[in-house]
Amino acid sequence: MASLVTYKYIKQNPDIMEYIQRADKTLEAMGYTEHSFPHVEKVAATSAMILETLGYDERTIELARIASMMHDIGNVINRIDHAQSGAVMAFRLLDNLSMPAAEICSVIAAIGNHDEGTGTPLDPISAAMIIGDKTDVRRSRVRNTDLLTFDIHDRVNYAVELSKVHFNEDNTSIILELQIDTEISSVMEYFEIFMNRMLLCRRASEFLGVQFEMIINGSKIL
Image (cartoon, rainbow, N blue to C red; front, side, top):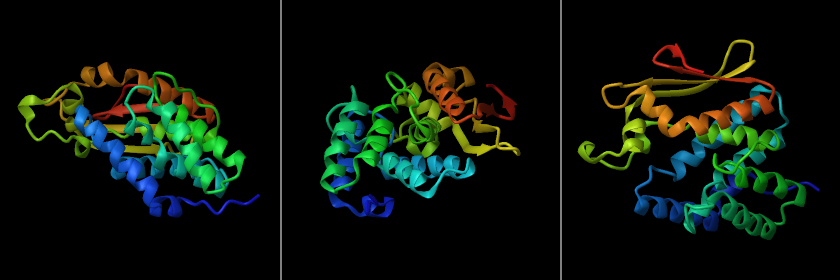
């Protein structure tokens, strides 16, 4: 059964847009970095790039974009267990749009498994979305404008002057390339808060049959 639910439709759905905005407001109140449209659209773009490069079909790529767009809506309830609550919310939204059960399963499995505390790559969609989500580190995600009151998350994100996800020449490795201002945050601080995320990226990459590499300031770290 073909589905009429597309990434473009999801982006124009007022209910889903409201959940994304309200979920980000929850995180803003808690002092978290930006998790709104710039974040979810970047996750969607990275996920799609990975699956396109590896030769997956158009509908698989489309489902990865849809899952990426909706992956953080559970934060409207609470940050704790937001992946699982977001998956349940996405089920109801997509079921009401008459998306086929097989496609809903793929989307909610990706949403429910994107958090490094509980997640695991289950299929190409979830694996690509994990990488797209966990590699989105950049200065523009920092909401705090007072450098003197930065916490470690603010410092690490603000220190990132360049962030790029790409494949090596023969498409055997996914590379996260960062340029970090070490006067703002050290490389060690990056790993202090992102180590579990990078390990999950490595597992997701291996699921896709490639390696995960990390380059910081021109030096290979992973």
